[in-house]
Length: 332
Image (cartoon, rainbow, N blue to C red):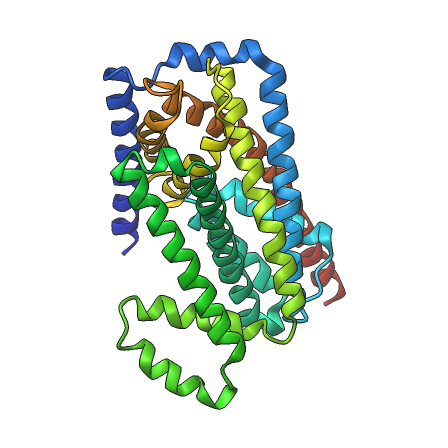
C-alpha cells in the first residue's frame, strides 16, 4: 500500500514536470518573462499582501464554522492550523492534501469532537467552492457579451450557474428538512448521481442549521476572498507584461483556473494551473500567448513563498508537543 502511494505521488510529480516541459517547449510558458517579473517587485509585494489578507479571512471563516460546533479555538490557534495546512500543500498533491493535514491537527485540539471538527473542514471547502462559482457566475453576467461569443465560455458559465443553484438547493433542503426526514433523504441520495456528495453536503447544512447567521457570515467572507484572488492574478499578469484593463474578465476566468489548480493531480496545482490559464486567457482581451501560464507561475511562486512561512507554525507546534511530553514524563 505504501509503495502504491509513493508511485502515485511520483506519477503526479511526473505529470506536473511533463506539463511544464511541454508548455515551455511549445512557447506557452516563457521562463524569461517569469524571471523578468522580479523587476516589478512592488507588484510582487502587493501579491504577498493580498495573499496574507486572504489567509486571515479564510482563518476567520473557519473559526466561525468551528464555533457552530462549539469548538472554541482561539483565532491564533486556528491561524496556526491554517498555515500548517497551506505549507503541506507544497508537498502533497493538490490543495486537498492540506485539508487532510489540517484535519489531523484540529482533531488533536478538539479530541472530544473529532467528527464535528472534520465536518467543519469539509463545510469550509464547500463554502469556498460555492463562493468561487458565485464569483464566476457574477463575472459571466458582467461579461455576457463576451461569453456569448464562445461555446466554451457559455458551457463554463452554465456549469457554474447550475452548480451554484444546486449547492443553494442542498443547503435549503438541509436547513428546512425535519430531523425525522433525514433517513428518507439518505435513501434518496443513494439513487441520485453523485449521491454521496449530495449526502455529505446535506449533512454539512444540517450541522449548521442551529446558527444560520454564522453560516451566512462565513459565506459573506468567501466572496471577497475570491475577489482578492482575481486581483492577485491581475497583478501577476501585469508583472509579466499585460497592459490591458479588462479586469471584469478576470472575475470570470480566474475562478475556473483556480478550480483547476485544486484538482489533486499535481503538487500545488503546478502544471495543471498553467495549462488551464493558457486556455482561459486566450479569451482575455490583450491576453493569449504565454500570458496565462506566465501569470499563473508568478502567482504560484509568490503563494508558495507565503505558504512556506507555515513551516514556522509546524515547527512551533512540534516543539510545544515535545515540551509537553517532557513535562508529562517528569510529573509521572
